[in-house]
Length: 226
Image (cartoon, rainbow, N blue to C red; front, side, top):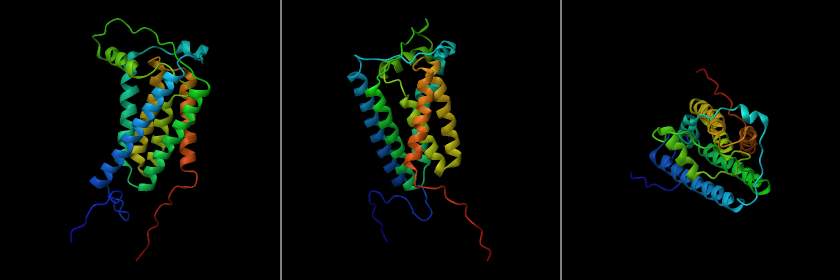
């Protein structure tokens, strides 16, 4: 018997096995979401460029400027979504994960439009021959200096990581760890204020809770004696 493939039917619902069709479908959805979020993020940054607010606190002076932590900033952000995309098995969990990302983005954009903010980025240290300095310089070119509060990088990655934990504990712990490192790196690369990082973590948690508000954790399977 030859079974023909239909879009949306690439996963075995009984065993929840990851098939290449299901992996491909998830990747297409993830890329689409990522593109929409980046377009919206950039457009709002340009739209609100003329009016900006500073959330500078004294604690921001205590944060060191470590350009090398840029390797935890953008790469971890990309890795979190890739690990989540390819490790989540259950269809409902995956689409609720996309929902948490969408909710987090909506909340962030509401702040970006109502209270636009920007961070005064310091000059990069001399020595652009170092990879991390060159990489941070490139990141600054593709990442607008405003849209800082709350950090959408932290919010979306944290919501995604928490959602992943619902389906795959090992991958969830890895992505949560990366999301927390990212929350620190946005400060040490001087891309965000301290309140941006904590605000992003809060938004990410709220988005996750909303997306899974009526989805309790599955009860552990019971062993039935023969």
